[in-house]
Image 1 (cartoon, helix red, strand yellow):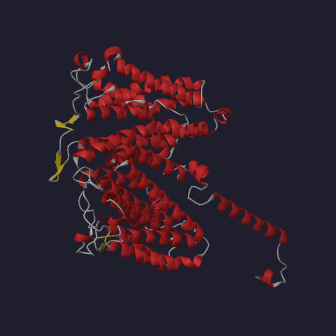
Image 2 (cartoon, rainbow, N blue to C red; image 1 turned 135 degrees about the vertical axis):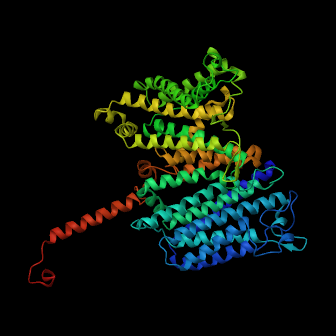
Image 3 (cartoon, helix red, strand yellow; image 1 turned 120 degrees about the horizontal axis):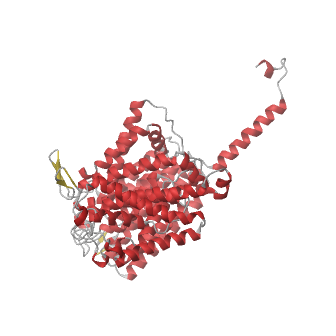
Length: 615
């Protein structure tokens, strides 16, 4: 993709977003337009799914989902993004007629999904095809599926906006236990399917998948529409409340779903490696969440603790280049994990000690300096423990009962990819880290951290020993990072200083803020996005980091509280209660109820002889 093509793509997409936004605002309040526009949008969406999208075969090969006119011989054999558009069209028609609370919110979300999918595919076909002839008419053939999809998206957004601003409905969680368990099983199985589809959609790019970027971006549009629709009718909130009520069952099922990822289409050597890397950084991000999310201490050198754990594990691994290989030999991996956590925790306490006298920006400078000191020390091979420019190579893999973790295994006749045991290990490690985080957050020390985060002076006035609490936050966070570093060292088989640069600390911090500070799912989701998006956008070469950064800016603009916020940040940034209701609406309702109670009290009891008194 050339610079001009990329500029055209970005400007066209922005113009589409502005057009839809203005159309939606203009329709606000005209509720009579809601149902007709929704019906028209649903019908046009289905028509767009059945129409051809490209007039000829592009130079890189036929566009996916049988979009090229020459291959359009099975109009009802839909696949790819066209099948997803057809599902959206049917859903829009159902919502237009069904008396479902929050349906206009759902229709508006579907409209955005349809519009994004249509715009992405339309622009890619036009750019790769050399002009608008590829998406309109060329040499006697026509293809207007993309424009029909754009029209459908605008109609659905207009319909959703014309229906007014609806509150997200609250579904009752008082259901039989069997029903609740069945709902959670289906929900988590659907989540596993979504994760697998997200990883595999578009393939790995390259000559075998020339349109991988377009397929993935269109799939993201599908996710936007799907999740917005489910959130609009209150289904996601209901599932979340159900999982909270049945927490133990939800944790077990979610763990089994995570362990089941290698049995899906994502069970390849490549995606297992990516999943392990995501797991390492997710575990590290959860540790950073203690420091930043709970205690409110800005740490810009946190990746150093991951590096400390990795280098300690490398020295205890028995690698030939390790300085301690001779006198100590290979140490059992369980003992290595404990030693890595302890050593990293000691350094965490040392770094945390300046927090007794500094805070805010000055604390950030102190942690940044520590990160740079660690990197330069590792680069210069001070003490001969890091290998310097030569690193510490040939670290042997973890083994259990003679089975190396870097080799493939068979389970029930199914051959799993190499490195799957590392994936199982990191899943269990994340589970342990989550357990530690959850218990600390709900404990006395966790409440002390959150009090320090909100107002350190007020916390000290209430009797909290803020100095000890902050040092403990650094210690615990560093220990969790040290555990992740031990797995990182054995998985990569080489530990080098350039793996722990300042940019990695920024990435970890962005994962915490993006996902939602102070929450466990937020850190995991943030780390996943920060590693999956760059991998899926490799087709764009020089532009992928810019697109990645733009996506982060948009998320922070429209979700400043994070993707999975806790109650405090939800109230602070989104103005919502823990259940997602608007604080202003709740306050207005409370005022009305209070005024009603005052009016009744001033009126006093009715005389017994009146009709009201006898009633």
